[in-house]
Length: 230
Length: 112
Image 1 (cartoon, rainbow over the protein chains, first blue to last red):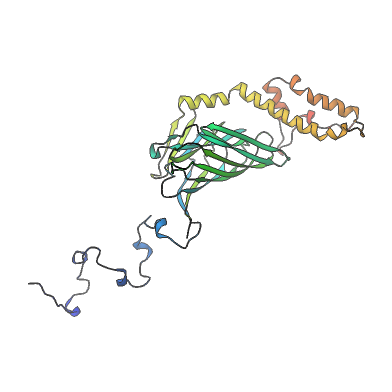
Image 2 (cartoon, rainbow over the protein chains, first blue to last red):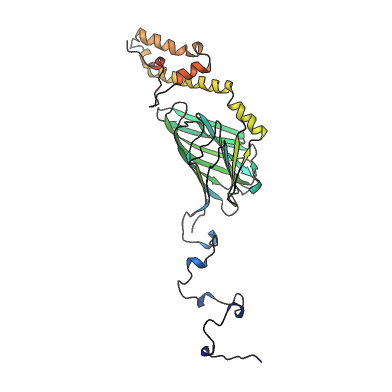
């Protein structure tokens, strides 16, 4: 016969362990206010769905450096259904002199491959000698953001990616880069914007140098997912 | 030399390096072929030439008399593509000092 009335004084301190507590039985009213500390929240357990009152929240998805010599640098598996807006920073980049720099979209997640020839759009900029820089793309696999970059000077830039994995909406990306031009050594900037006219599920992107390799000493790429906040 | 493609997986954090595919390498080699590189350098020469010509266009206005030495210099600029026809010549025309200034004398506007 089970006992139904055991006074508190009849229970030894710390005698009730986990096996004597039913699953999903302890309500939050039993927690001491402000008692849940950082150590009791698992890594990556606070998702955007659990956050409110935070406007324009940027969540770092990946931060990586270009540690090996290469002419193309790809980040796969960074665009998922969790977000429909992303911000990508590319920092401390250098490449072969007079190199073009393009962006391409990727598909296939971890087994990524280049997206189709679906990109259309343009870049347009101005440099310090008062001349414009411009170019365009129609149905291309890659999108040009710089016609010619100087190899002696780091450049930095960013772009936003919209709805990359929503197949009923076209992926688009738009951004800006300031740089010193390789052919003239004039400094300037380019704005760029491209749309993928397809229903591809884009899961990553590539930065592509037309000439030479990206430098391996400092190039960094950070990808952030963006929520609407509330 | 085969170009390399660096691939970072954001979920696993792993980075791998693979060779360019034959198609990627062909596109890279085509873009960096001597013919294409030379053509791009000629375009740069023409671009700089256009800037220099524009800077003295005002002297051709009807109420201004363009000095002969400017006329001669402008003709020299116009003749650059005809008189410079290979990559070595374009390299000399496009050479710059450490401040980024063009060093070839043809770009310097004469004063007399």
